[in-house]
Length: 182
Image: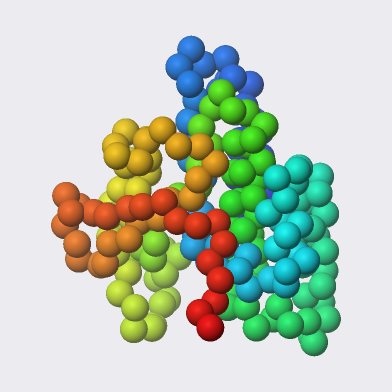
C-alpha cells in the first residue's frame, strides 16, 4: 500500500493538478528507510533504480523482481532491516523522481516525518522515543511554504529529536541513497 497507494492517488489527481492555475505541488510521505534500502541493494539493482531513464513500467518490473527474489530464504536482501517497508518506500522515492522528470511544470517531492507517535508505533517497545506527529509534519510545511520550498525531485526529512518545540523544528534535503557506514 505504501507504494501502490501513492501511485494510485497521484495518478487519480494528476488531471486536476495539470489543470491548476498555480503550479501544482505533490508531496509523498516517505521514509529514510527507503534511502537506506536503496543503499543496501547490490550495485546492479541500485543502478537500475537510479537510472534517469527509469519509467513506471521498469520500476514496477524491478520491484516485482526484488519482492519475488525474497521468496528465496537465502536471498541476501533478507538482511535489510524491515525489507518490505524499505522496498515500498524506496518505490515511493523512485516514483517521485519519475514524476518530477515527467512533469517539470509541477513540483514532486518526498518527505519523511521521521519516527512519530502514531498508531503505527503503538506496540513499539524499543528505546527510541517517537516524536509528536505535529513535529514530524513540520517538514511538509517547510517544503510547501517555508525555507525548503521551490525544489522538485527531492527528498526531505524532519531531523528534530522527540521533545523539540515545533518552532525549533529542523528539516533538510537528504540524499536519495544512503549507503551503509563502512
